[in-house]
Length: 198
Length: 198
Picture 1 (cartoon, rainbow over the protein chains, first blue to last red):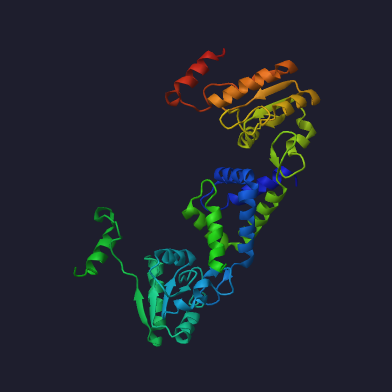
Picture 2 (picture 1 turned 60 degrees about the horizontal axis):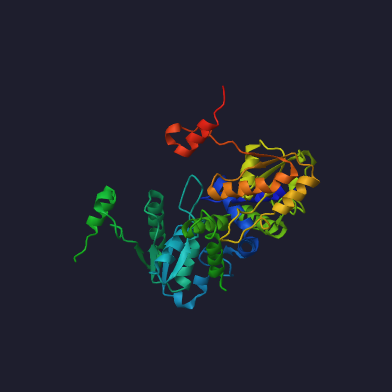
């Protein structure tokens, strides 16, 4: 493999990242080549380390480079609350909000007969075990407001009923900064049904 | 450093790439985390290898992972023509055109009194040595059509005069597929001055 091909190969791999096409991948690699010592070597090392160490947390399903993830390892987060999210992107989004102080359960998908995703694949039995073992008082279902998300939420709510845990879900309504004129009808009627006294 | 920080560090490094902001860097890293074996590990390895092996070609200034770059190493490209480009992005652009079969000289910048970039920094003496050593017949100045690019082109043309080599520059005119209505006045008048019989 000659030298040009090695760089071309790197561009082809970079172009497979979401948000980068062949053109922007080339620009990114050129930037890296120009800053080989300051940027490229540290980035390659960081990526290699994460690729080697990253694993699914056996407790919650989060991806982390530790044995169990930082959230499950933090005793301050044993608040008796578990937030159920569809995938890690949603967990990260919740963490950015800084509002939830408990732990998570990452489903890794939604129930889907077509894709043969059942309760076992989503770790529902593991979640039930945790509710008993960790003395959980409340499970917050933070699933996407799609048909599949809501179907999965209802299934989980039913499956958890025998545990007697309190089951809640995120409020639906007008987003902060949202303008009524731009909202869909479903959101407006949901916000109206869930209206509260000022 | 706990597991979350290692991933956060990778996101921060990715966000420094051109074309990726914090949000798209997070999305890219999430994609990599999901495809750790198929995508992330090969990408990290390829990037590490390029970061380690990449060097400036001592002959032309191209970046390559070989001792000298693939173009300088290819005997078929000893056509007696050298194309002078401002930087490696321009070399890559020329190569994509598949029209030039000779070798290159990468300046790595343009003359700039402010930034203390003189003929020595641009490798002009090295270019003159090559013209004699490699029996070069023609030097094509493919510099950007900016004031700095054209100033540098004129300087190089003067510096090369004693060697007696033929000095040419890229034609200026209407780009292929270009619409006159959208072209600037300078391009239109340049194209008119350089008009040719059909």
